[in-house]
Length: 466
Image (cartoon, rainbow, N blue to C red; front, side, top):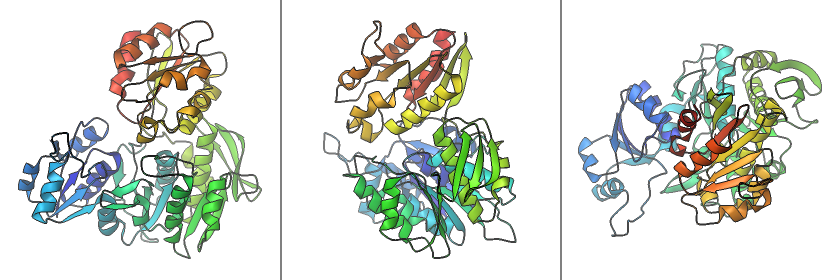
């Protein structure tokens, strides 16, 4: 089959492209404004990338167009189609499908799917689970919304073992599937092990409130077989409400003291308790309570497919996380610069709290961030930003593209350069860079947070500080 992927450089669609190529299909794709790491991964696989969504791509004559959720029926100011290729596909009556639907029909069929859902930590937890299963000799397939450092690729088919059904671990996103399928992506995956990591309000561009997201999570729960298992965070009231709507599968909880799996000790070194009994110990390089909970989720899910907690904990000792998850990009003059994907206020807070725990009170933490997600651009969570940034000594906000006043939102931190002023705003990357360079001093830890390329500010900082 020749598939042509619209929006191929998104983390999900890029992973799908890699799986299709590995399965022997011919893969081409198009996107706009491509950037690493996905563009690098696709080129390394020999997948042809076309810039833009021009109707002339019909000449490729693929067997199927696979449509990412970046594509819409939007119009430009002159009335022409923003995604001309999609209009041409519809006019010509050519076959098309969504990424999740294609994946379900051509990759996931016949596999034991382990799906990791949640507002935060999906990518990290999915990668942890895949690495645990890999270390246990289970050779899982996986699709992760990032590039795991242990594997070097975001997706692979996996091999499975003769003694068990092939395993496939997938990051299960609640965002909608495509412009023609407004269900959450994860309802297509039909997992036998479903991890519900956490749940709070996000994606204000498509969900009206938390209850609307809870309803989608329950749609996922409805697809789990009676012999399957729902692994859920026992600390989350929202997930309790989801399960109260009905659950017809096994259940395993984690996180709370009364859960099936809980932790005892600091996030970097802790005992794992199963129903009150110590069954393993995790000692690793990751920081933060959020990663401790991610580990418990992965351990509980692995246990459902026969990997003992002690094996899982041993695997986590060599876990290297994912690119752009507190990835140290370099150090210069005693100043460390990190790249992190955090963009939701809770994710920003947990990232900064984890870094603060790691570096101690004697070293400064500088938070450099851009509210780039659709939710943050709408300003739906701007009131939470001072809370999110509380662990940082200084905060620097890139305001380009916002139609709300970031300075006013950060007023509680004090905006300016005087004594006691902890926040600054900048309308351009150049201005932001100048602010951070002027403020930085040896011993500082600078974490740059965005769900986009952030103008390459990480390397620019290292160059300017040097």
